[in-house]
Amino acid sequence: MDGVNFASDDEQNDAYYDNVANNRRNDNRNRNRALGRAVVALAGHRLNTRRQSQPMHNSTLTGSMRVEELLNGHEEIIQGMISMKAETFRSLSNLLASRGLLKTTRNMNVNEQLFIFLAICARGETNRHISYLFQHSVETTSRWFYKVLQVICSLKDEFIRPADYTSIQNLIMENSEKYRPWFDGCVGAIDGTHIPCAPRRENADAWINRKGYHSQNVLAACSFDMLFTYILAGYEGSCHDARMLEEALAFHGFPLPPPGKFYLVDSGYANKDCFLSPYRRETYHIPEFRRRRDGLGNRREVFNYTHSSLRNCIERTFGVWKARFKILKGVNNYPMDKQKMIPVACAVVHNFIRMVQVGDPILEQYVADSEPVRGNVDVNADYVFNDGIDGTGPSTGSHQHDPSREAMNGMRDQIANEMWERYQVAPWYKQT
Image 1 (cartoon, rainbow, N blue to C red):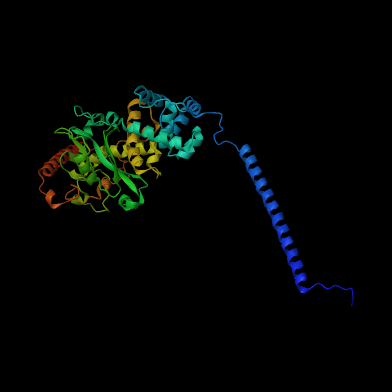
Image 2 (tube, rainbow, N blue to C red):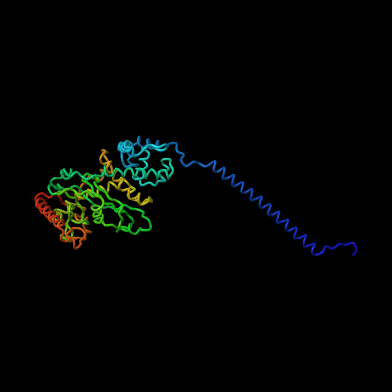
């Protein structure tokens, strides 16, 4: 066996481990090279994609150009967008600009600022959708909506004013056989309505109304030409209408009329001071099977029917108001301070349209009939939720001997007796 060299076991092991280490280094080197190529390829792809991305606001029309196109377009289009005619819009825009309440900026003129606000209120659109339409960022749209909202609310005292106490309202004069002389001193009607809202979670339960959804309660008064004469917004949906009226009288400047003048209210309010409510239904209960085909059966029915036909002007005003501004029908995600301002701003714009605009398709749907639909209405349907004594609102022991309440009850009885005497001679209501 001379001349033959055999490697020791240690030498063979060293060679093996050296080979394994070399293979691992080669694998790591190849992996790093592949990873580097992938990173470079991804970076290049992102760069190319960024260079080739399509801009979001790429319309050939700027926001101001789109506004002018709509204002100069078909009347139905502009009416559908902002619930008013182009002439009315320009009058409101000129008013705000002339007083310096809104000013043209580098990127947006006064017409566009106002149009964005009205489009959101009238259509109930989101800020994002309006941003796409008028080629602005969502932040810009939101900022200008709030700016115009504040400006419109600042006009509240100018456009929401008490009714004229020196003259008899036109609706009463035009229907003198039915309403005079008993309602000559009536200056309007009062009621509450609920506007859906999205309150903060901390006190959300307080905003749930009796129908089970979150809302803010809005108290309003209107004249018989369907103009708001007072509005108070921002109370929780759980707040009762009568409580809101007490708060309005005590803290929010509700305009009390002079002696001899009064408002019509439903039976959820007390029949006292200057507020005339109907008789409670249970005080003259009539069996359900009794069907009168010859008219009303007693003095209290005559009074309640006549009272309802005149008081429902507030219901029709609410109907026009909510039909004109769809933002009042849905839930929005604005902060609560903005949500409380929106009903007030919409009431201001409603009054402006009512004062300035000639011909209003939305108003015509509600003003055509000033009384309940005959033959299809319970003349006492508005008064079934009364918890008071003899139709005088929520009852408490301290109210039962209130001199003001007793005076209004006496006034109501006198009116009902005189109405019944005339009605028997010349009835103004007859079911068909």
